[in-house]
Image 1: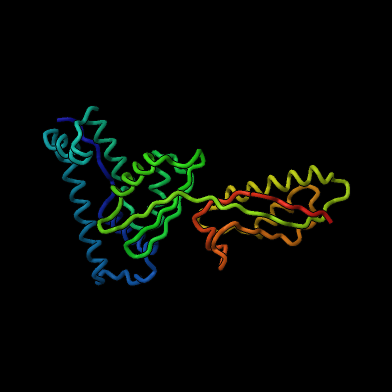
Image 2 (image 1 turned 90 degrees about the horizontal axis):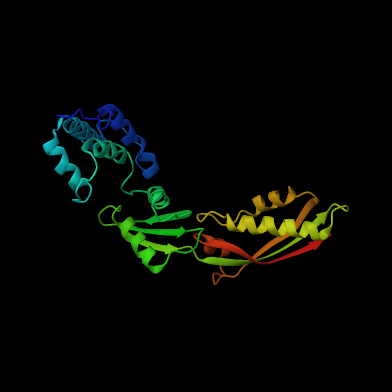
Length: 261
């Protein structure tokens, strides 16, 4: 019998601590972590079972491990050496494979083999809206279908996952600049336009553009003494509240109009 690797060194106590530690990230309504709480009791049972299963797997022989690992990896034949497969499983076992929170969906999307640059998830009951953006270019219809299947395998039962690619919203930017008299307006104009375009391109999917932060970046440009009347006009159908329309969208500059004092 081969020398078996220890699949996981976590004890019952460590597993339980990690489980309870994840509760605040899932809900702020569960504040009673007393052992008499029914939920905590359930976590204790699951932690005990997990520790027991880890021990049993560590003691298992080759005749059990091969079919067990084949089942875990989708009933595929294990081509590599058994010890290498066991080591790979030990690594995979510690890697999140199911999404329960919005952060889980975002992390799994970013870790996928589809080179997703940004991801934003919003959970509403059993419906999860996931918006993705790939810097190298939008996913093709075939890639999007493959990505959807990849993510659906990592959803909990009963979850309805809606995936879309971040739309691009164009912005028209107007601002007034008080400049240092020794700086050429043409050079300053180029630097300001680049700074604005960079801020729009790097805007997180989960937030509207931070205009105060943009103003601070503009003030760092040599020659800019003051920024006044910064206005961003979004080309969107949402005329009620443009910031909401920017959630889950990528922005790009259509025009940048600069007036010098």
